[in-house]
Image (cartoon, rainbow, N blue to C red; front, side, top):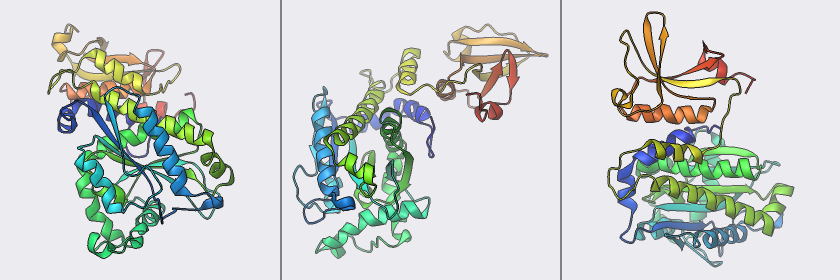
Length: 373
């Protein structure tokens, strides 16, 4: 399970460790605040692929997401709109900012002149290719429907890539968390709904620009695709989308809760690492074993945790004249990457992953690229 930006399992641990982020976004009632944004609305129908209206479908999905999240303990849901009204782009993110929200999630439907199909989830960033730019440009051009757009978007031109460069700076602090949420949602679409995976991407969306918290924009599919458009316009399709987006948000919230433990700077335990590992899907390489090599030394050390900065599951192996010290042992490549990240956080900055088959050490790159998975 891979994304084109950063590994999901590494991000989960990163967020667990980033306690300062959690402290900044917990309100006095310990509620986790999610702001849901249904794209377009009112005089702005969005795209009209196959005669469907993006504004209507996005709103129906958002309301279904809200209904699911509101049943969760300690989650508070706010909406930029709950009816068919036009909300200016620059007014959407401030709803989340004023509420000191933990997440901002904007829901949309895609369109294309071809029969393109599939889901993609965006975080704010410089577009990596022309296609990403065109999607952001299309969504940003809604500003021209606003009578006072020149006043509210001084100097911003949706058609100019240069205008988008400054937009990324405010979201830089939250990029890893945004990518984590986007990855969880996108993986749910791919693994649970079997939708075509167009991946997690970065692009310059104005609606994400002014949000002061992790933010994502979800393109739930293409209304211009005959089957996908009908699916998104159906009750089943909207229920499916709402469920998987909600589950992504809940999983994200739960991964953060591992770090609270009533302490501002919690000590990460092996149990918490195991819980974080369980969040992601397995990525098993049958017949192979992965380990994290912590060190090589001529000294024969006892493998008790106190000798290895609290790490458990450390084993020693004699290879030539040296003793090699390994942490973990698993055929699950996702799990071993998470364990490597954990070891680095403990102070083993130069640790790396090694692969074995029937006791023989192999080149990791060859194993990962093998067809035996």
